Image 1 (cartoon, one colour):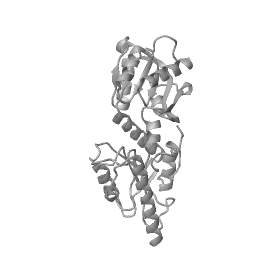
Image 2 (cartoon, rainbow, N blue to C red):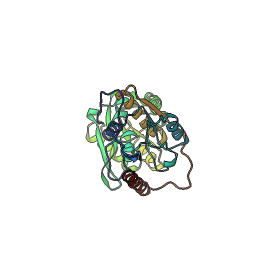
Image 3 (cartoon, helix red, strand yellow):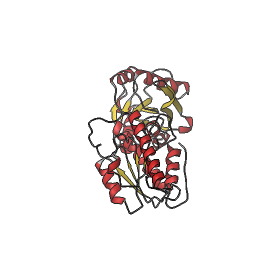
Image 4 (cartoon, rainbow, N blue to C red):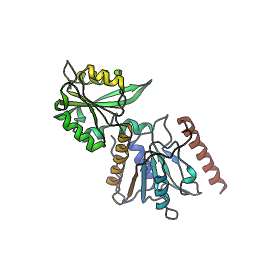
Length: 304
């Protein structure tokens, strides 16, 4: 994952935008990073300082409350959301900047091509293979396969994952909890095809020998019946962490990077259920809403 370092004690809006653009590179079919921008005339991201950042998976009551609590005159906390689709712009303090990223976050900070998580699980990232291409998108990275620096039992790895991610539902191979694991595949999908691709990649890289796949742990989000069946056929252990747990890991990791980059920055994470809605807007609707917001902001600035 790209590194980012700025020596200033506190960032500006522009520096935060650059930070997130570096960690989560833009995707042509994603929501815009600058999902909601300040509407006042004369707004300049290069001279707007940031004292606090609020990070959450979705917009919630707690997010709005925290943003309003941290609002100090012209200074507003910046918000980052992974799934901003139900955000109520009227509930934001006036002059707020909301940043968002959906696709790259899923790709790089959940179960998928997550090199940061791989390092924390003691995987040899310098020997890693990438599983790329999914659902008609040849560039989409859905997994990373790499050997462990030191072989471990499934039970030990399950405990490590539980502590790191917050969940670890193990589906054992014939070797049980004492199965020796030599490599891990962190995968964003769990069908028979993805299981086969992970095993093939491990064998082609010399990580896994021919025969069964008992030495390869398949780490993913949600359990899928067909994926579990294929893993059982290959005698491969599986650990599922759940969709929400891996999203929360991604938010915590972003918070960690922010605190490492700007030590005096107030970094706040909110983890709670999303506010119910009759119907969540589609990705297209979310994109259109953001475009309309930008047009309105431009019109108001010109007319001011």
